[in-house]
Figure (cartoon, rainbow over the protein chains, first blue to last red):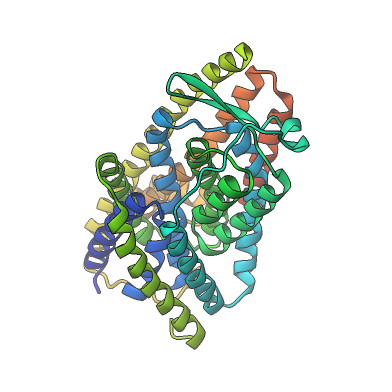
Length: 278
Length: 131
């Protein structure tokens, strides 16, 4: 395949990945990797390097849009980033010591898990009841404006949330993804942070975490500019369009269709990883 | 209560600036990557692509010093990689910006937490892992 043809195919693929990723909330990374590995036979190491770049692009791109509607709790974000950045580097180190086939299998399972999480109805657990000692100490409780009022919220189970973020960071570094699904569990379900705050705060964390792993991947030579170029441009254009469409479209049906596609991709990745044919 | 409202307004200003910073960061890096891509394709479009196996020894521009050196010769791949570096630094700039925000609020605990995060990221720059 000539470089020009390769670039065009990846550009179109990355555009669709960015578009679908932002419409379904799944993010770009989890689609870029199967596209490059299963679709174009690119080595998983390069695919991960390209994916981590696409994660930063989507995160920063949508963060700009989020600033208007959501309220990032910079303290929660910064506090949890201690866990996610440190563990992301741990994840990249682990990736250098285990066989690529295993990384592909783990990726497949995370893909399956993300598909399930995408379809699950999210429940807002937030409240302003008694909060934990740690949440008070680290000033994590906050407030956000809603319908002209200021809504207070309390943050719960800080240790549990911090541990979940550690896991999310490891997977982010290991697989080159944003680990959005795990961050949602940590913030919404464990720490009971309201959606309006958790969505934008987790997006903030995804970008910073990915930046930490991206620098290590760059040094390892896994960020190949010839692949990163169409991926970056395609994902940014797709995600920007997706964010615009999302405001006026219901995506329930799309999510179901997309979950089926993602499940097929996931099973294929697991099979190829187990048989060593990737 | 009133203190918290004031607090929130301050954060809102910082966030508006941050939003612009992020948007500019993404647009600028995408443009740099695009220009690099044009230069690269102009010189290499008919070459055969080979990304089937990971060959770390073949990879060029895997450090900031190499990328800056490549920029001087107007190498397409170096320009792309420079854009990628700009993109990577966009969220890091957000951390730096937040640290200044905490400093202005005199929240020293969070100045330290922010610096810890920054140190971890900087450490990743110097981490050398055997392949």
